[in-house]
Image (cartoon, rainbow, N blue to C red; front, side, top):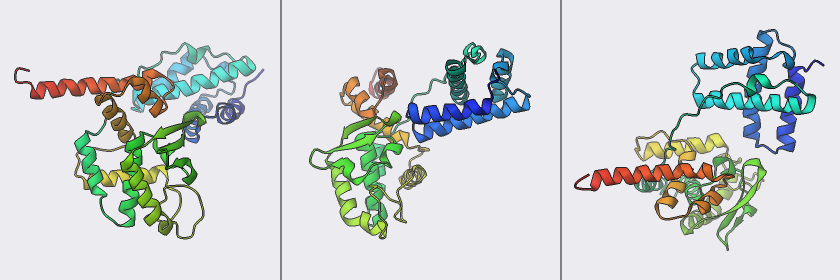
Length: 299
């Protein structure tokens, strides 16, 4: 039986979207990785997944290295293709040995970048104005830092997801898993001011329930949040290239530095596995070591 790659591709994307409930961003990454691989198969004249052998798998991965891609990127692409073959094997009995026996490139060991508490204070000072944009940006920054939520979770928040009385927000995490995250008085005040004095004016008679909006009144996007945070870093004169997860990393790191237990941080971040949270212990240990070396008279 011939297993056409394009047919399996369609069935697999439907599977991860509907049955596995992967987020739109994750599905998009799978589509991109698999489509690139199918182009490779077409160039090699391979029209049947059963004809993909270990040498073809090695040739494909070698080509990825030749493009200068990072090991983490190559690792993700290999995982995407391996999942495709595993799916085809379970559904049609396709031979999946080629990528199953392929050496998986190890991920580069990088500690997540984060802001120190004083740097966070500088960021907050850059949006201390009373204009509509500053009020909105302050509410965004306060919510991100108070909760540690992902940007995809932030831009999905709707007005009725916030419980002002309890000080919690319901967010939709990876795999469409709901969780409730508490936030403090600073975030509550910033959100209150934004809703009362800013949001309706920015909406410009548009009708939707998303909490955060852009200057045209439309729901804020991931790209919009990146632009806002980059502007704040630039205005704060911080010598750092920001990406949205840095606020999330800062949230987790500062909690652990101030005595929070690992399980609580795991639940707040929405991590399925404790190992995903444990990386922050390496950050705090390195921070302790540097503080000791810089301050102890006999270090």
